[in-house]
Length: 109
Image (cartoon, rainbow, N blue to C red; front, side, top):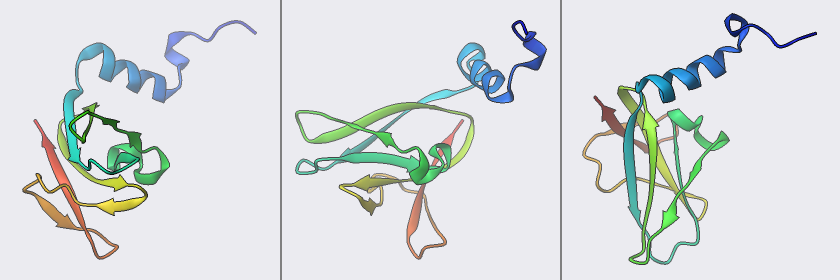
């Protein structure tokens, strides 16, 4: 059996190509200040929450950061700091989540 024609590519490959190749995603940088933390992760609807959280990088100043590409629209997220859920203190838009806490919302235009 030979290689599959492009029309039969799995949908996830086509979607990945659409974001990277056509510029539909918008780069978004997230920051969280936690100088004593050993681990900070970004989790949200775009990472399937805890299924695929993004490990953030710690700067010398104790500010953790990561940059991701997100499609236009609202994106709910939170930070996992040493395994504990934390709100984004810099985010002005918070909405209740089903677990009794708050999700931060990043609106990508």
